[in-house]
Length: 166
Image (cartoon, rainbow, N blue to C red; front, side, top):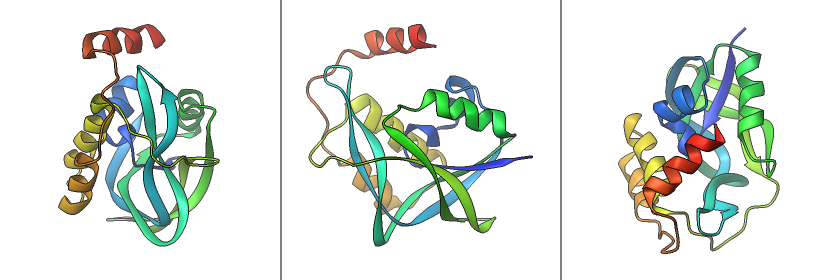
C-alpha cells in the first residue's frame, strides 16, 4: 500500500528523498499544504546547520511543496528514523496538482522559533527542490532571498559529516 508524504524542505529534492534518505518513490507532484506557514524555525547545530525548515498551523496561509507517493509503510518508518526527534509526524490536508485534496503525512516541530537563519547550503538545497518541481516563482524567490548564517562549516566538511552519518 502506498503512503503520501508532503515535503517542504530538503526532502523536496529528488536526490535527497530517493538517494540520501533511501526511500522508494513512486511519484511526486507539486502540492499545497493548507492553513500552515513555512519558516526556518527549527534550531539545528550552530556551526553546521543552524536552522531547518518547518511548518506551523496558520489559518489562511499556504505552504508550497512536493507530495511524494512512497511505496509503503516501511518508507514512512525510514522517514521517522531520518527526521529529528524535534519533528512530530501529523496528517494534514494537502492539495496535490494531480491527486487533488488528500490526507498526507507532514513533519512539523512542536514549536517553531522566530529569527533563525539556515546555512547557505541548506537554504539552497530547499530552493533546488522547489525549482525541480517548478513551484511558484514568488515562493522560490522568497526562500532564495531568506538570510543565511555566516557561521557554517565549509561544504566539503558538511559532505563528509553527511556521509559518516549514513
